[in-house]
Length: 216
Image 1: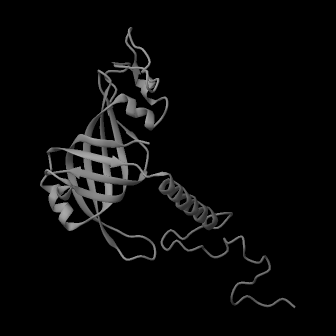
Image 2: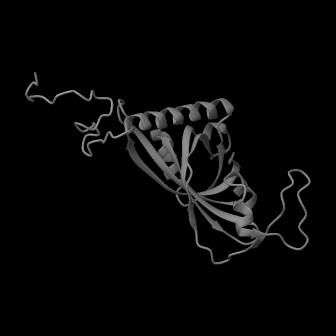
C-alpha cells in the first residue's frame, strides 16, 4: 500500500469543518492539503499499469535486483496535464515531524487520504497532491497552521491487515445497507430520504390505501 516515511512535503492549507454522521453528534474535523514529490515507482501502489502508461525506460535500463522494477525516467507525454486519481485511502496514521524529538511531532490517527492528483515529471518523478481528512485537535491545528507554505517531513503509515479487514467489512456493510434501501422499485423522497408511498415492493399487493372503500 502507498505510504511515506519522513518524506519532505509542503503544507498548502489547513481548513476546519464539521463532520456529521448518522445518529451521532457533529464533530470537528480538518482537511490538510499537501503537495509532495515522489518517485514514479510509487505509482505501482495505485495501479500496476499507471507507471508504464506515462513513462518509458532509457536504453540502459535494467530491472532492479531487489524488486524487479525497471527504471523509467522518460516521459511519454511531456505536456500531459495534472489529473485526479479517484481513491479513498482510509485508516492511515499521519505524522508531521516537527522539532527535535517525538514530543514535538503532530500525530493524527485513523485519517483518510483523498482528492489525489498527479503531475508526471521528467527523470522519473511525480508531483502528487492530496488532502488528509482527520478529526481535529485544536493544539495540532495551531501547529499545522504555523507550517503553511513550508516543507516538513511527514510520515503516512498505512493500516495493518487487521485494520484493512475492519475497513473492508464496514464498507461492505454500508454498500449492503444502501442496496437494501434502494432495491427493487422503491424510490426515496428527495427531501426526506424516506420511501414514497406505493413504491415499496415488500408491501402487500392487496393492501388498501387509507380511506378506500371496503370491497365485500
